[in-house]
Length: 465
Image 1 (cartoon, rainbow, N blue to C red):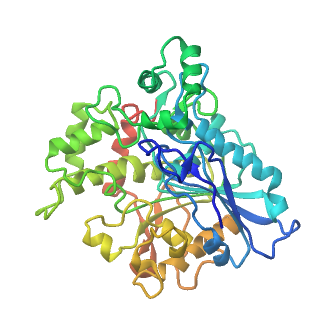
Image 2: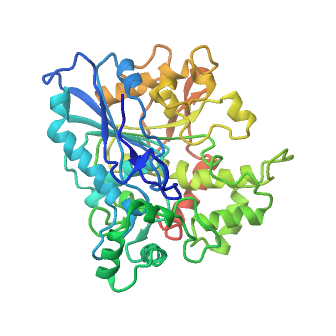
Image 3: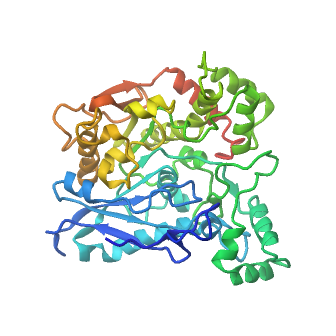
């Protein structure tokens, strides 16, 4: 199979021949037996990349189709990222074009997927990391308006970043325009930017610090509150009940922050600075609580900074773990019983030896199958590996959810009954090493106490009003 090129990335080399400004392609994986009358369930997957890159281009949907016994269709696609997808001046250049790309794919599916054997009235929206964040944003888009574009959603490691209004993100537009020699009023600078080649833009396409921060964030370009597709901050939208009420899965990995926090973080001050660079409105007073909630777990620190795991724990929960749990609570609060939560705790020996624990979105390699993620899968996920059985187990749940909106329908024999989330027990499915599964209840746990802190300061991390 020949794939289309994927989209130009922030900090990506202009000489990278795998990327292009002409990048809006999608791949469709359908059983060879599918016909225009098959009306198979559709899994529409949004890749991650922090809204700054396409980090999962060309995932192979064959593994999921096979795991479903040829009963589903899988779609993957690219969308614009960085300045191409999320630059705005709040006026002539609208924001959130990357999200609008995603929305266009959903509309395309409604019109044409029947010709490939798919059922446009049975679409499950999926995604990982920024793709999972995109899932949450489409749930709250247009104040939670249900346009019938999807009937269920599964989000792997949903990500809540710092979110600005279009006006607050103006510094990004101004800085890029200056770097490219584009000055004048809004119309003049936009005309100038549009005249630049992709090579010229890529040579100047890099992140700068958020206002008030000391160093560049991991990801600068993000969706903005534009008053159109996004009308409120994420926590606030879910708190108000302004979201599409469909069956959902939300979950995360045990150590979601280890891939992001600098491994050379050696002091508490460096830990605090890293968090401040990602969330620049955190206050000094709040850091007192953060440092108390996240004590340093390390007694010795061979070959890495002693505060790497401490800052990883804080970052992983504030950006990934807690947002997903909040959304699970919101679905129960507003009367949607078909909501399931999970934690991926499948330990790979190599990742454990590297100190990364169970890192961000590693479950993608099991859900899609280790041969279908372009060499990214841990060795233990392959046949005869210690975690080989985790692959059919998670695929059983995922393909069941895609086919029936319930992850238990065709689950593997011996795997746990995945109990829906409720706000009393707050139970989630735990995926363990070797493919074992069991429920764990979070009510009254230290984790929920820490998450309550992040929810309560949502204003200062630009995730609620």
